[in-house]
Length: 226
Image (cartoon, rainbow, N blue to C red; front, side, top):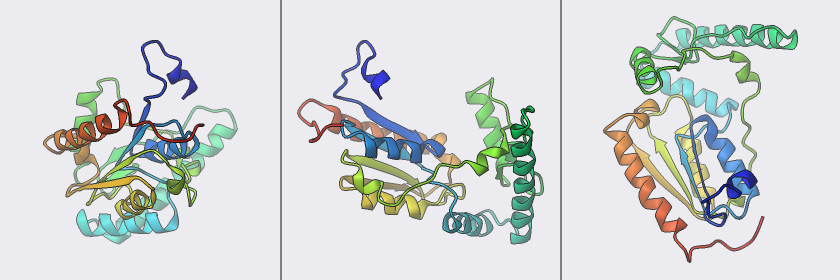
């Protein structure tokens, strides 16, 4: 935040934070610590894989994507085994043991579903240098949401939730929006990755671009410092 406020052409009193998916929890924590933040937008945010959120995501995948529970549990076991292997390699100073981000049911990956090929194609189209791999040790070092964080966010907060999300917990995101003193909640009847593609993406961006100018224009400065 200090670096951003020191950039040429940036008004240090009019900084907003925006985070999507895994960066959502990180942005929320930053906003709770910096009272000078003018506005915050969280999009399909992830707040850590507690037992409740993991259970909810497995339930949603079983119901909405029609993946058998046994296959989901088997994939989870294989994912943990890959993460252990990668963590041990990291501690020995060896290169990461990478696995796919997107995978079809029955294969090993972080995001498993019948639409994985479509999500992968979209990722490659929007980022030609993007590779379908990551180091699974990430699962041993996830973002952790600490209770009371949302309540400390003094800036206006917009949380955009995908109602059919199976990658993050939409109910937890909605609770956090309601817990924030100036929180707003918008929901969309789609899954996690539909947020990143039209026609839903255009609607979400329109909602966010209405929210941000409302709170970034002069005369809407928050009270307090930080």
